[in-house]
Length: 145
Image (cartoon, rainbow, N blue to C red; front, top):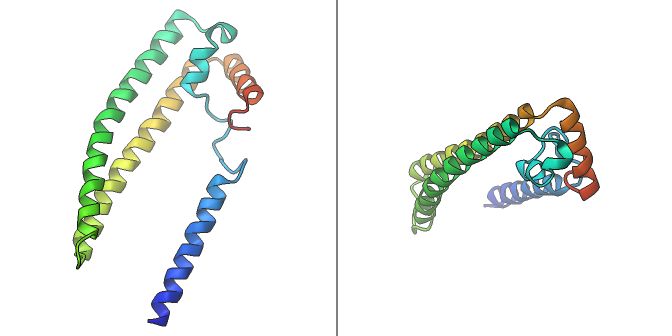
């Protein structure tokens, strides 16, 4: 029993450290690598975005949003199913872990789609536009690269 308590406290401590690190400023190793589409959209003239760039970014954002919507519905259902499994008086460990794998797979899909969109937006911008966008982000306090 004591070993379980110690293990639980250790797990909570590790999770707390992970959350603290995630919330710590300037800890994002990707900060400054990408420009959110919202920044490009709200500074089109300053960035001198061409019609071709705008059309490509709009298409990328629309595709990502469509995918997000579909996956969010699946994720909600999978999370709901996981919750019902673990709320049982006796939890079927194998079933719960299999359902967790489904949830994590969907979360991974969302993260992958987010990263893909950020890459697509960055690749549409010239190096000068990227530098200007990062400068605008810093001035507005977005992700301090």
